[in-house]
Length: 394
Ligand SMILES: *Cc1c(COP(=O)(O)O)cnc(C)c1O
Image (cartoon, rainbow, N blue to C red; front, top):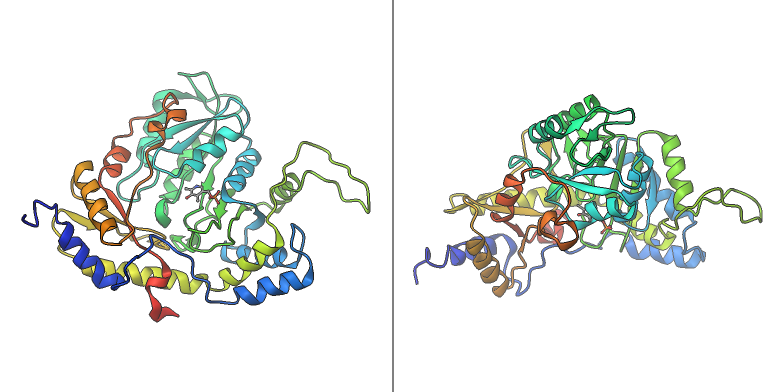
C-alpha cells in the first residue's frame, strides 16, 4: 500500500517519533512532579491541616495571583465549580442564556447548566481555535435587542447574561475584539482560562483579561493539584464574595454556625494546594518546555503533505497545552485513520471534543451557524504534549 493510501500515517508517525523518542507508550498529557511536591505534601500532612483551611491554600492563592497580573484568586475544588461560581458572580441566573463556544470541553456548558441557565453555542475562528469575534457580532445583531438588564434573545425571549470565551488548547482568544463587542452589548465576560495558565495575550495573562475567569488544576492541565480550580476576579470585593459562597456562606464567629445564604462547599483542600504550590513554582519551566516541544514539532512536521501544525497568532504567547495537527481539508475518515494508526503505534493522539450541539443533552439548545467549528472538528488531531517530553528543560 502506498503512503498516500494510508493517508500518510506512516510518514506522520516517523516524524512524530523524531520528536517524542522511542518510548513504547507516549501519553497525550502527563503531569511532571519533579519539584518540591513531596516536601510540601509532607509538610502539609505533618501540620495536620489537610482540609480546606491552611497555609498552603493561602500560599497557592498568592502565587497564582502573581501569575495572573495581580487579580484576586479563590482556590476551588475543580475548574467546573470555579466556572459555576464565576458565572454566578457575573450575574447569571436560572433561565438566562450564556454564550459559549461549541468547540470546548463539556464542562464549559455544564457549568452554565448547573445554574439552571442555557448554553447558547457560538462558532470558532480558525486562526485562534477560540470564539470568532466577527461571528459573535453578526449573531448578536441578528438575534439580540438591548434590554433593561442586558441584551434579550428575540428568538427565545431569554436574557443573554454572559459571554464565555475559552482559550482553546492554551491559545488566547482575541480578547480585545470580544471584550469590545461585549461591552457595547453590556454582556459580562467570564474567561474560561482552564487550559491557558501561563499563556499571554498582547503581553497580558490569560485569566486576567476579563473581570472574572476560571482556571483548572485537573491532572491533565499544565499545572495540577490532583483536582482543583480557581475563581479569578479583578475586583477584590467580588473575590471576597467568591470565597464566602464557596465556604458554605458561613459568617465568621468563634463558635456559631451562621450562614446568610445558600452556599457551596467548593474550596480547595490544603493538601491539594500543597501540591499546587510546588507545581506553580515550575510553571515558567513548563511553559518553556511546552513551547520548545512545539518548536520541535513544527520543525519535524514542516512540509508534511495534507496537514500542518497549528501555530499561535503574532500577538499571542501560548502555553501550548496541547499541540494540534490540522488536516488541510475536513475529512473525518482520514482523521480517524490517523488516530487509529498513531494510537496503534503507542502515540496517544486524540480528536477534538465532540462539539457541544452534537451531545444528547445540548442538541436542542440555541446555536449559531457552526461551520468553522464543524470543519475544525473534522480536521483536528491533538498530539502528545507533556512537558516531560522536553527533558532538557529540567
Ligand atoms: C478542564 C476544563 C474545564 C474544567 O476543569 P475541571 O477542573 O476538570 O473541572 C472547563 N473547561 C475547559 C475548556 C477545560 O478544558
